[in-house]
Amino acid sequence: MLITVSGPPGSGKTSVARILASRLSIDMISGGSIFREIAREMKVDLLSLNEMAEENVNIDSLVDRKLIEIAKNRKNIVVESHLAGWILKEFSDYSIFLWAPLRERASRIARRDNLSYERAMEEVMKREQSHFVRFWKYYGIDITDYSVFDLVLNTDKMSAEDVANVVLTVLRYRESKG
Image (cartoon, rainbow, N blue to C red):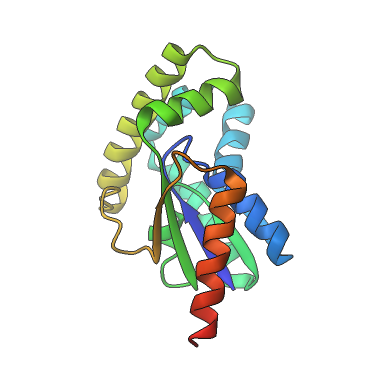
């Protein structure tokens, strides 16, 4: 089973993907981790790499090619990335989109990255604007169109464990229906 988990920064996609992979005893790959690895190699922060990616399609293409290669060659895996649901739709058995209001996502990122709320809010807004522009420009993907997803879930008042429980309940129900 190939499960994709997508969503904006701070939506919980990485945490939920890890929990799903653990509970299903399958591997997990993170597009965000690949992107962060590229940023470390280039010695830039995430926001700077996002800005560079607006002018250089090769940055996103590298991440996406790795994810597509994994999806083609591995059947039991959870793939997490901003675009996983769109770029892996032909391989995915189940596609999930997680979101939460901007204020909640900024709070999560502030805690996770040890930033002020104001700084996290500024960074999230800039990253999202960059994503919207890049993904439309390079792929023709409207990241506000959730029609490719099997499940869209607001994670605002839920822990990652709660979200994973909902997803697993839906997956089990779907499997029981054949």
